Image (tube, rainbow, N blue to C red; front, side):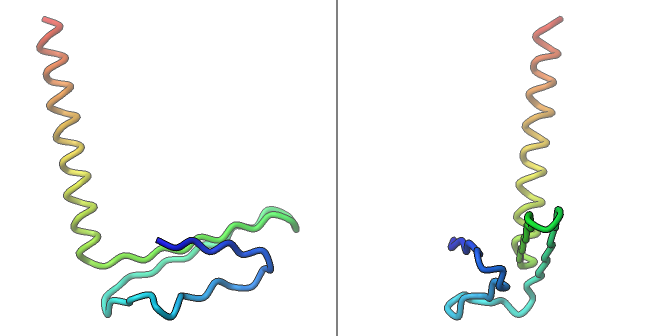
Length: 76
């Protein structure tokens, strides 16, 4: 994954070689703190990526619940 560092204040444009998906979702956010501090974030994800994130979160939650049950059972 490429990272762009902007020092000129110019907007970051997508690289021409970046593949796009017809159903991708994009988000951008800009935070300014005074005159000197400016933070800009962008993200993009496809519907398949949303499903993968959901499955990963479910797997982590299931593992954490199983671990908590084992710890509780061992304490008896």
